[in-house]
Image (cartoon, rainbow, N blue to C red; front, side, top):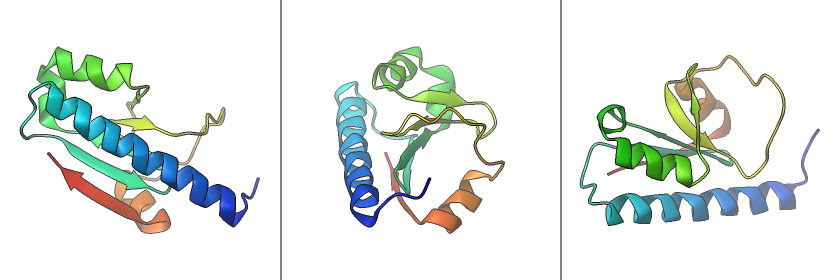
Length: 105
């Protein structure tokens, strides 16, 4: 289903808001470095070595509504809940296809 330009923009704005909330929450938990965040289209992706060892940070990410993608080895959030298989593209391929903004903490 093709989205209108207005709907795509609305979803991208929701992703930017989620990204800002995520950064704020992670920093409030004392995180100073070790996390990569990316907004790809209207999805937000989070990964980093520190998430493999810090259960509190993983719990924070999960509590914010992110789901772990074993295929891409990263946590994802989207304002649209789709019930499909999704693509087989890697995160770099998705970033190239849809554009991305990356952040590091």
